[in-house]
Length: 213
Image (cartoon, rainbow, N blue to C red; front, side):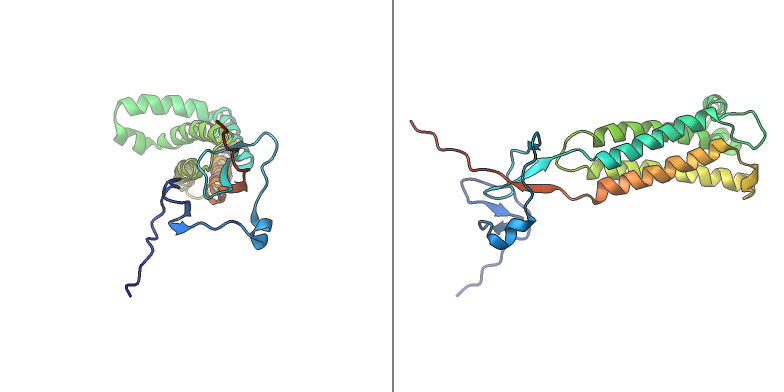
């Protein structure tokens, strides 16, 4: 007798070949599985691709992750209007304008002056706002947006760390704009992790009625 090995590669459900879950034959949910299933809430949008007969993915927004990313954008806006040096009047927006002028002279000039740091914070804050809005849209999962948000938030964190190094690790010399930039990185990381670690929701769906013709 030849032993058959099951292919662990995930495959899509094929109505003609029999339903499957991650490549394994699907079985009707028993009494023990009823507690793990989430009923369809009122107004929830259910995906048309069923995981197995009687189960389907629920398209839902990630409200917590989206709000965290939007708050990161708010912190970025505050960073643009607040001073970046203690006792100074130079705001983050002034530094971004200077960064645009330095970028015309080349990337070397932008890095030498350290103006890439406020520019990275401003650009990263704008991207996090867009990703936050995407998290608020119903979807089967938001892990791709979460990965992108994590990369952006880490870039903002690198800019804040670079600013702290340029100040000789003298935190007292940094203005409130820098600390708002640090809040952008922190909120961005939290929102990204929330989106990445939230598993897709699977729920029960009623069987489709048979057409009588």
